[in-house]
Length: 215
Ligand SMILES: [Zn+2]
Image (cartoon, rainbow, N blue to C red; front, side, top):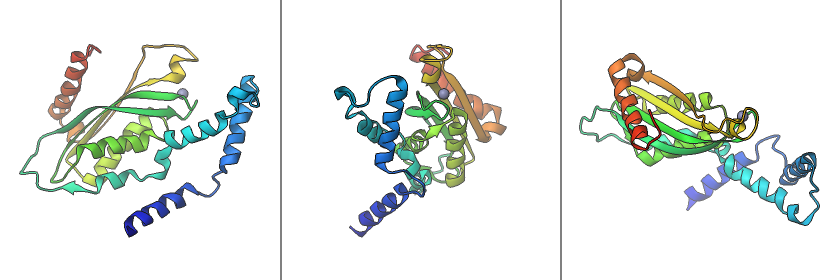
């Protein structure tokens, strides 16, 4: 009971970060953008829009109020000498680019070589969400996920590959719809040992081929 109250207090405190505008101010900013787009925020169909947009922002950007390291704190040390790659592939993510606030949708593949601790696989997916639910640059998100796993679990190595489709490219600008961007970060044995890196890359490429995405 006390624990729940405490964590609520903490999230409330962080959501009142210094300099954060009020909900009313945020809704007003949406009305300004609606006028900028050429519409009338006072017309009936748009009356509820500022409130909905601000609530959507609370979901899309919830990652600012969470510490990704929290998800990796609970680990299992009984791994019976397991010293092979742990791989989680095709973790779907939804993020927004920090240049246009346009969606980036894609998949993350994570592998690590445990030293003596492993983490529940759902926790890796939660970790991806925390970083995805912030304004992002895909290269930065890739590096942040790898660095977080590396610093908390201290494995022999970490590999992260992110494939993302950027709506700022597909719906505006150069309008290239079938392009996805691939970024990767290899640390430890995945960087230093070509065989380990290849094992990881083959595992995720095989999956892509099986899904008809191509290699
Ligand atoms: Zn963009």
